[in-house]
Amino acid sequence: MITLGAALCTGSLLVLAVPQIAGAASRGCSYISSTFRPTLTYGQTGPAVKQAQCLSNKWGGQPPKLAPTGVFDAAVLKKIKWIQGCHGLPESGVIETRTWQALYHPVLDCYNPYPA
Image (cartoon, rainbow, N blue to C red; front, side, top):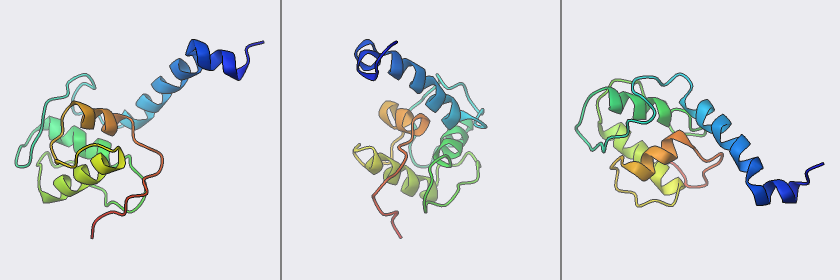
């Protein structure tokens, strides 16, 4: 019998949990491959922006749902900055490697209030 401590030491528990979280977050968001993660900034358009919008909707709480329009507008910018803050990332509003990681692996609860 494997104990919890042994599973944590071997990483077995982590290996089992990560794919389930990643799959759950990206379920229904198939505008681009989950491995294609371009840097996105305010004003850009296209399927990668749609993917970011869709993934941002996997977050619970107060933030409004974003329609997957493919336009990186003020509403997307506001929500991305909030998500970055929830993950302890710089609130730049730029979707880069660490922000994509946050989008695919959302925190369960964010205690940062959503800006009015």
